[in-house]
Image 1: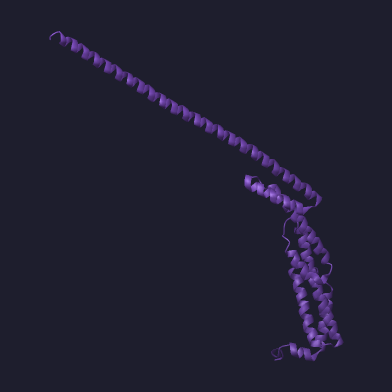
Image 2 (image 1 turned 90 degrees about the vertical axis):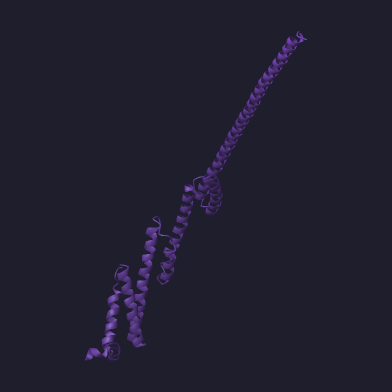
Length: 252
C-alpha cells in the first residue's frame, strides 16, 4: 500500500504538467491565431485602401482627360465664333455662343471671350441702326421718331458720338420745324386768315423753338427775328388783338 502512493503522486504530477503544457500550447496557438486574424484584416484593409486609392486616381485621370477634351471643344467653339463673326454670320455666332455657354456652365470655363464677341455684335448692330436713323434724320419732320429710336440705343462709349450727334440733330430739326410753322402762320396773318388764331399759334411755336434752342444750345436761326417782326407788325396794327391780349388793368 505504501509503495503505491508515490506512484500515484508522480502520475498526478505528470497529468498536471501535461494539462499545463496543453494550456500553454492553446494559448500560444490562440495568440498566434489572433495575431494572424488581425494581420489578415489589416492586410485586407490596406489592400482595400490601396485599391480605393487606385480607383480614385483612375477616376481623377478620367475626369482630367474629360475636362481637357471639353476644354478643347470649348476653345474650338470660340474659334468658330470668331470665324463666323468675321464673315458677318451673327446668327451662327449666337448659336455657337449658346453651346459654349452650356459647356462653360457645366465645366466652369471662363466666358469673357464669348461675352466680348457678342458685345461686338451688339455694337455693330446698334451702329447700323444709328446709321439708318442718321439717314432718316434728313427728313426734318421725322425728328420725334428718330429721337425715340435713338434713345433705345445704349449709350456705350463706342456709340456715344454718333448717337449724341443724331439726337442733337433731332432737336435741331424740331427747332427748324417749330420756326417753319411759326413762319407759315405769321404769313397767314398778313393774308387775313384767322388772324387772332394764327397770331397766338405762331407765337406758341416760336416760343417752343426758342426754348429748344436755349435748352439744347443750338445755333440761332435768322428766321427768329423775321417771325418776331411779322408778329409785332400785326400786333401793333390790330386794335382788336391788343384789346384781347393786353390785360385791362395795364390801362389804369
